[in-house]
Length: 460
Ligand code: SF4
Image (cartoon, rainbow, N blue to C red; front, side):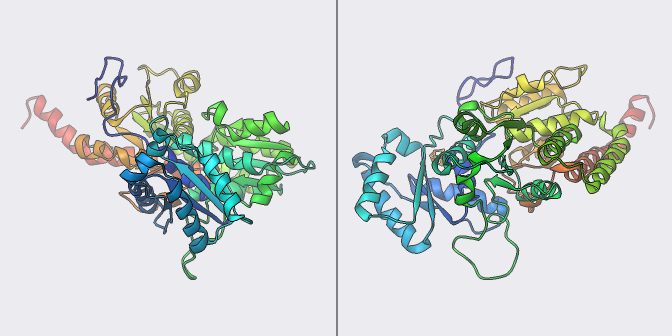
């Protein structure tokens, strides 16, 4: 049962969660590594849920194996199932890497994965397959932390002290494959070598054609990850990433790789920061095409600003995306009035409070929250537009508030993997969608308002 307090904090169990489960985030990170298969150590239901969530969003075949524990193994331990599952995964998929993610069940059982894997490798004399276990107790965190944890563990597994290079590291949060491609296009324009991790831009969004492959081509190459300690710098889009989970922080502390912790390049100022760091690291001026795209964005902002002041947005979802979208809305005249995330560790209030413009009304921040609390805040703040994933679709059904789909999961629309919001061009696409949602609402209801007003004045 949930208890709501006057300050909108959820005091008891969550109702209609605004987050997904921790190993699910780890699955997506592993899907961004070349020749990798994922194994969930837990019950069948966990992996089925993760498969379904990914398939509904990415509309691709997403293979996830399971150790399929039942009541018996829950009591006696899951090692035999783990061994059998590893044998099967190696035989059927022939992967170079196996990422193993734990679940609520196996974390509660206290399974010692490191010990089991080491015994398995020894007994099978395993060669040519790297096994990387990541603890992902979902009762303690969300898919966001699962994503960061897995990414960091992968880097910890492969990184080796190496000769310095002129290349850079790019570490991304959970964003759409289209945004990964846009970030790569921008970096390519500066002609600088880079390793981007985790790169699921091809594995989770494949072009049509060719035969089905059990492990799709693409992903960050482990040999490149091994060389990350030699890079001249790391750019990590992870302002909201907790330090203990931060892959960039690991590279900085252990290998002295300078870290640029940046917001996602969504919005004018955020993209300016990314471009400026790329220019500094590459020693090259900003390419003409990016200057043109920046100019088009400024033009679009001038076109849209007169409408956006009527926006009273709710922005919710994964913290890194929420942060970037809030700054984008604010710099376009629509101050977010409710900012929400199911993740507890994003620190959004501390990060955003100083930079959101002084609105007449105070923004409500909800972290580690659920949709029951969000719904209450939406009513209190008279929100008229929502920006986030499909979890908020009830706002349209119940309150007539349009929901601009962005983030993960988007399971009631197609194309979630193709939503591009990064860079100047992506920002402009989002801004147009946002402003048009407000205009559609305005033109869809103004006759009704006029009618009600006239009636109120004694007409008709
Ligand atoms: S929350 Fe726990 S039990 Fe539920 S799917 Fe995730 S790991 Fe499995």
